[in-house]
Amino acid sequence: RMRVDPIDDRSTFSELTTAVSSFIQDVAMKQNRKVILVGESFGGLLAPAVAMKMEAIAGKENSPVMGLVMVNPATSFYKTNWSTWAPILASLRHIEQEEEEGSSSSLPTPYSVLGGIALSVTIPDSSQFQSIFDIFSKTATDELQTIVESMRDGFGILADNLPAKVIEHRVGQWCNVGSQVVNPRLHKLNVPTLFIGGDEDNMLPTKEEGDRLVNLMPDCTSMAVKDAGHFILDDRFNLTSAIIDAPFDPFNKKTNKKKYDPITDWKVPSEDDIREAVESRVKPLRDLVSPQFFSTGSDGKRKLGLGKVPTPDDGPLLFVANHQLIGLDLGMIIAQLLEERNIAARGLAHPIIFQGGNAFGGGAGPTPGPPQRITKRNKEGPVDPPPDDFQTWGAVMVSPRNFYRLMSTGQTGLLFPGGAREVFHGKGEEYQIFWPEKADFVRVAARFNATIVPISAVGSADSANILLDPDEMLNLPFGLGDRLRNSSENTISARFDQSNSDERFVPPLVVPSVPARHYFVFGKPFETSTIDHGDKASCTNLYGEIKSEMRRGLDDVLVAREKDPFKDFAQRLAVERISGKPAPTFSVEELNKNI
Image (cartoon, rainbow, N blue to C red; front, side):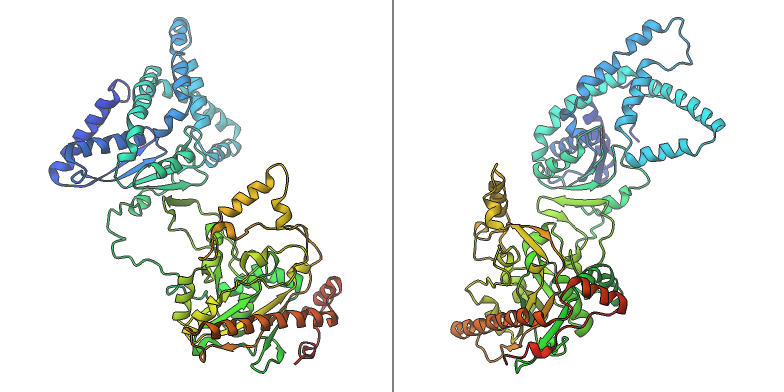
């Protein structure tokens, strides 16, 4: 085993690197073994230097270093003020020498006190501080005196085990020199690397360092640990598990592991998960807007409930809906289909949702659990992220390929052709349809004989007041409008055939008003089995019919709701609270008057 004398060693950074490299040659290269270098703090600066040295000795292809783990590494030392403050702290030893004669040996030295304070402020994280505080708060008075005496003795431990001369040497000859040697060469170090950093590290700018190394090094994965400080390797963190799951895969666990396919590998949530989601996420919104669902038969007549909605037993099913303001009704649609017809509709969602957006802010999906303590990312983005609400409930990113695969595998899709243009509509554009001219979704649906059902949804636009619509937001002064425009242009477009700048992704400024009752009319089903998907004219005609059926549903329900005896929020809420059941609505014949 190799050991460096913690008190008397005065090796240079180069000598230390050579010594560790020679040790690895003896225990690894001569025995044809692979090694994983793990370095914490200064060790995280030394480890890549050793990896570089081993590449120089054995060549990149023959280096015994299979992986590198850098824990809160001192590669970021050059960004701190420690090179200034450490020599000042070390200079306090001169005061100790001047006061040594005639001083009491039981008193801690200035270096011990100030050094101890510096370490106590920068090393523990909030949880570790709390643990220390709990010890004091729960300790009896007589025991507290013993602890205080132990703390006084503890100051002496710093002077004994980390003398001022050692600090001065390590900061000047190890950290400073090491940063100058290692950092300019990190971009050439082609060793799979796992960076582990605490987001509460007060000693080094570790949080920013993780992002820097991911972008700088050829193969680096960053593992950010929430609520962890510089002393990250405590009993809350399992270093062994982190290494086992590291990108260099020491036990070849990932070699035969099949990559998750969101189209074919997704499973419908369990009944318990559905029940919990409805109770915690959907029911609060249902209580406010008391939604009413109607379905339509092939003859065009409507009935209350979803009894006339076809099932996907005979082939793929595609729901196409208008996108209501802010899109908070999505969860109610998915939940109703699951509960009433056991139909799992898979939403085709805007790409921004998969970059941190909330899938079911007003609807189906489990209550979010506590934030993940550990998150990983590399140059491509998040690594092994936990499924969010959207993915848990079957949503996939909207793209021609994903839509094609959903239909080809006989699944049920939920598409909003109006996209961002409808969900972020302007003043006076309530319940207008903004569909693209191309009939692409009809052509793909027809290729696999899918049944298409339009959904006409009403209520969201009446539950909010638009103070500034998207056009007005873009014209805001003081550069605010320009920032919104730049943000919109940098947002990935949901449509493959248009640029990011062509899709205006600018939400209006809205304020909630009295919640209006919501109505959902599932329109007449359209069979595509008689349509040739290669016949553009036929597909375009069917596209127009589907759009017209949606428009008919919107117009009819906007008129019929005026006959709803419980359209008024206060009256409806009172009745539902007393009865414990949804308030009745208008007669379904109001929707069938024009048939």
